[in-house]
Image (cartoon, rainbow, N blue to C red; front, side):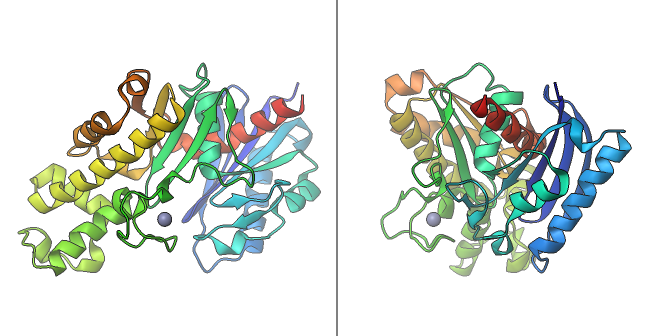
Length: 323
Ligand SMILES: [Zn+2]
């Protein structure tokens, strides 16, 4: 029995490498920045040395590893070896992450989309353990989801399932980062919350707080803090709109999949004042009552550790599939 796992969580701004056990105990973690100018080759070298260092620190050899799980933002090819598309981290596209890690450590290595990995994190290490139908939805700079139905992670025919952020809610609506208009992500992400305030200010909206702030300094987090701390009406309005649209998105998902649980995570979910109740109101308004009754919507308890657990869970999921 090999109890140790390495999880590599590649994010838009940082990379985290964790060493943990199959039971979800994280023994050590190393984090470094993945700034946009960096090359995949350079980052991978840093990942390799972090893995080596973690093993050395805990007096382990690579032979004692069950596997390495890598979570990346983007679509993975059907053979699950390279990242095909990663709009925010282009340098990973077609880069042979898996081959290089296998060659270096001689350990089974698996790649997974980050939102799918997060759902696996809930399934193996979180509150999704005894659930067969649930989603993990991350509401952050963007919006993504991992879907587990009948106990199985749903990847779809080409591996792009779960792109809830790009479901259309408004015909000819706001432009989304994906190039389409009216996507959920263009209304409810952290970026969208900041953009709402910027747009309203440009259109002449008044705010005692925001008139002192440069437009370029307005972020989703600042809007959230302003809504919570000083009850700025414009900030509250921005959060209400984002919450209303997210509620509609959740209702669509509930109607479509009849899940028993939806776990919400990501930066936007760290500030739920002026957000949770309008979101739930929209869910109640739009969801089919029978499906809604069966579904609990909660914040993920794994919080900021979801990336680490997700990457580690990728190994357990693949090992289980191969057994
Ligand atoms: Zn989109």
